[in-house]
Length: 508
Ligand code: XMP
Image (cartoon, rainbow, N blue to C red; front, side):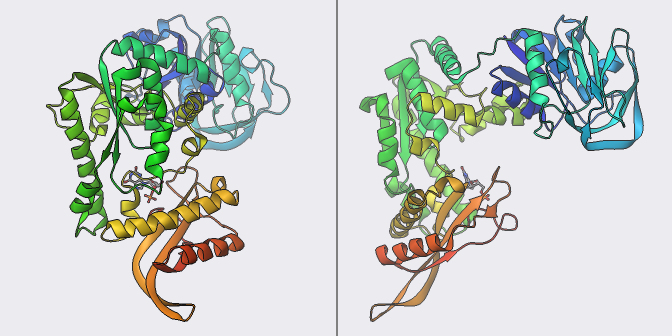
């Protein structure tokens, strides 16, 4: 039982799904033209028609597939979705000269969708078309001074349209409308972490039966949570393979192995591949070339193990693919599978696995909630992102075991000091970079000629853009002192004060 959101290309569609989930209701996003059959397979109790850039009177305007509007289900149309309800019902939609964009205050509102809303209603608009005559059975449920028809309702058919976006934070009371729509649809609000976990376990059990499952773990939240989930669902049918490429953080291997202890020693295989990785990285200093070598060696190591195990009948390869990856590729259609297959990272075709992706319907924060329920230690759950190529891209230039060893100690001092001073969660990501620069210093009576390290900490919402974190000067002083005193190979510490853009978060 779910709510189906048909996506007509709005940049906010994903946010609509998020909002419903925050109200503990399950929703799926399907392409605007998803077939009736596909929609029915989700057992919908209601349909949302999203916004989108098209105009309903365009000849190629996107529409729901045949039969969808005949389903006797409540429908909520947002922006383009509302205009479609008008157009489809026989009303008229026209371009209103100027585009209405941004904040507006409703002059009046009424009807079932607005039930229980009191006081001023601020709505966030983004449109240039507006209904000029309504289909039979509809009344105007909301208006602003600029847009007389901002909301419409057909109580008999349970069809509701709003011109503004209830899902964005700039419509502060928007959640109440979504909540009302859930009540109209009779959707049980039981999409809680505990319930999600219960469903995931049941689904995995049903799908996998008595087959064996292989999983590559990186130590990140998604793969570690998946390991714990699968272990709970299918116990010893799971084998998790942890590739230690020698580019991990100090003590990271121990932390991951401890976190995954519930799997049982025989179900977690740690591959020590340091020698192969460092040999492959010898003489490679160009950043993209390093990334490629690390990616290739990772696949090789995993492939060797998969081949060794293949003889013992592993049928499934589990992956921590998340919902945003699925939507990004194709809105949940067949094309999504093609992308996930590539996510496996180029395993050869003769290693024929079926993909098991239990998190395909979840957002990252939902996975974190589940991680908590499964007992994944907090340090791992709430850790800053760490790139797949690990410290390999934070040792600038050629990567050697000696340099990684230096960087591990520096990184550990920086990160543990951030935690000690209560600053770790104030920044989105913090890292240390070992530069190839050596400079002159003086320690005691001795001249030194040692490495320069750079510390970087950023604030960021999505890692696409970032600002340098204004860490307290006293804290930076303590960290710099600790580093030069405890890591003899380093005699100079600098702090990176560049934002992204123009710089990136990582240095390579
Ligand atoms: P940049 O350096 O591009 O990083 O500003 C943005 C975010 O992505 C992470 N990052 C990676 N993650 N594989 C990953 O899994 C990679 O090759 C990679 N490169 C960068 C980076 O740590 C930051 O969070």
